[in-house]
Length: 383
Image 1 (cartoon, rainbow, N blue to C red):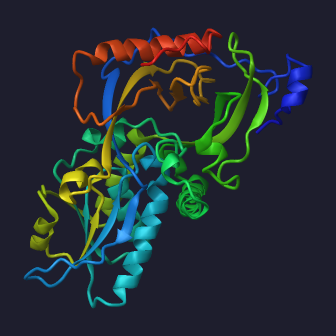
Image 2: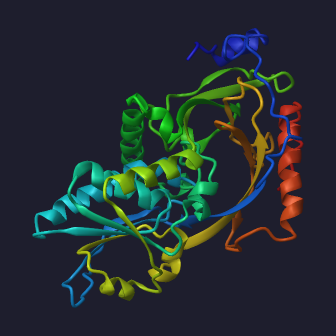
């Protein structure tokens, strides 16, 4: 990355910009994607943080007792934490393999959490029998596919308050970083939808980066004048990754099928239904479904709205996040072939699909983004 000026230098020389003086093109908010320009997703948030553990209670069945591993509740950070949490699941499986003669795995759920778990297990054990079960095997219908794909623990950071809890989150993030960098160094890295991105924010506190993410994962921000035509105030530049779910998820499915992982359509009403499976180890990656499946009242729906624009210029390859000047949520993420604009969180609302009241929210999302890039960061309203 080009050197960025310090804040004091930028204050002394207002023309000094991040990216060495280059002006980046603003999004064109009139260019909506031709189809599916408006999206709604249910983030599977969990109060207290991600549930990632080996269950103490075995599941009895006529096929023998089964072990249950939980991996759910990543709401707002599923793409970010997926590879790291999959690594932890694989460690649990490695421990169980010492107790089970011929283990087999059932992964419940085919969002990014389930797919990365299956991929990590296949990577470690080429001959391990793995089956993915889900009520709908079309990954385009998952919450993960609707996600924007920025590497940042924004939705989950506040659940890790103590120093010990922060160490746990840091471990997940470092594990994710390690796997993402492995993929990024591979000869076919582009097939995973992974790309380095500069993330620009206003010059204000960003807990997800500044407090919850170690600097060896996302380096400390650099300050300077933001590289936009009208939004040319002092801001911050972070270096992170885009992990585009519209590319990543289909790629994982294709690789898993080629490696012998089976995908089966099946729905479960409660954990008791797992007893009918033949697999000896079950990995619960059901996201928001875990609320009912596990009777986990800590799982909370956080509904969000996105507007998707067409990406038209080659230099539109940045993120803008961190909110408006009045702390209202606002972000614009440039991906490979589109730009995702968002900024809503409806806690406790698990309504799927678009309803009439959503239209006004979509309009406010675009209005807030226009205000930011027009250089009016304090004019955002609650979307």
